[in-house]
Image (cartoon, rainbow, N blue to C red; front, side, top):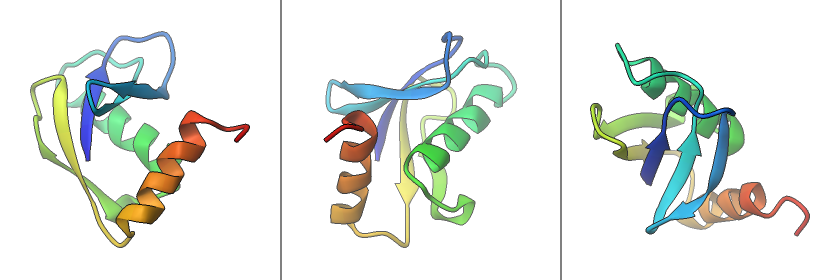
Length: 89
């Protein structure tokens, strides 16, 4: 799953789609892996995943990251993203 990270934000949240990537904001600064850990937590909780289902696959030191999501179908993942982005729908 392609992600655009926004570290040092005012909130921890999934904040929409940006250039085809899920935009995820975290309050942590991008130092010593703190922002990456926060990103994992926000995505895990927002998309109702278990920790074992998500891992940072690519982009450890850049804002453009790729997370590997397992044990869930692409349709289920899309549905959960849609629910997070449109909670009243």
